[in-house]
Image 1 (cartoon, helix red, strand yellow):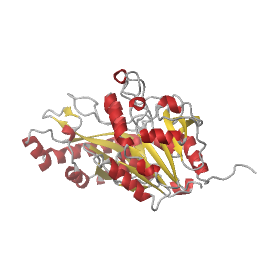
Image 2 (image 1 turned 60 degrees about the vertical axis):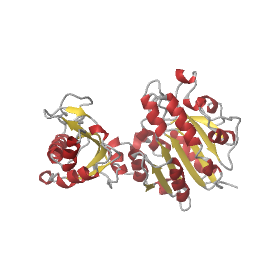
Image 3 (image 1 turned 180 degrees about the vertical axis):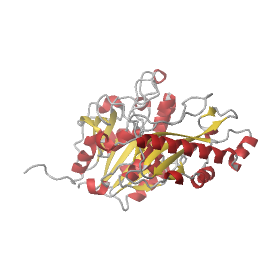
Image 4 (image 1 turned 90 degrees about the vertical axis):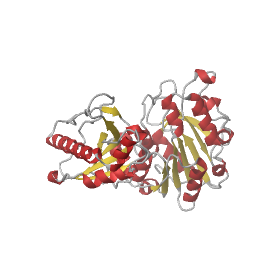
Length: 407
């Protein structure tokens, strides 16, 4: 029997390098992950360069590549995708930015770039969205909260450009930067820089005496009294996923960026947040397969432990995740692909160009001799070494959804 549905399970940042605290093993090698090992033993394995060999892929470019949208053609910056992930309906030509709340002292210097890791910015984000007036520029804004201190900004209007800098000083003790043209010093870039500086000025005035921030100050907490924006990009046009691949699909991801990439290419977004238990997220995926052919399921936590250099915690999380995967393995007609979007070695606390281990398991796969899911074992698999852009064509062929090339 040929599988008819595809689960693309992306364990964000799963790849690693040998860790001294784990006896020279990677977190995957050290982890007890019987379900992932069984998937490897009953499937076909390999390693994958999410974009290309030697490229340190971002989560944005890697996901586009893996979903079959070459980033060299489609990537226009992280901001528009992050904005889409925060629920903003991004249209081609809109300029999007990543944003986060920060704290200014009385002298106007940034003293906390994450505003005390404020947990809920719904109320102050609504105040900024409703209070900032850029009509004199012929520009309207969309501004929505993300997770914690994060948010997203989108600009709609004529003559806008993404060729502008950030106001984020990337450090504390100094004021936010003035936004200026970056790259192409054009009329549209200068206009957009002026619009962005005015947005930041008005947002600061709104936030300064907002009741939420006054209450935070009274409680000895850092107020969220300024907005830092970065990652500008113009929203591109994406061929809908269903038209491109012939599959209906959904995206389930707590990370706004990944949810935004999925929704931008036409996948149905299923809301989930970082605090949603893993078993509940698995249930959401199973529910989607009642009506959908394809689900992109991204799990973020391993990447965060990699960025923090916490190898033992990364190993422990992989073991926790492994325990929740059994329902997928028992689902008939399901082609399961397990990979990372990039490696995040604990030793460097950043993305690396190391390829990620890959499993494809389902009816029709040629089972190889690999019996463990880790970076070294999978390198001996029959898939050998592929690029991210190869994955969807391989999966589509395995579920008999491709057409012959040639006569």
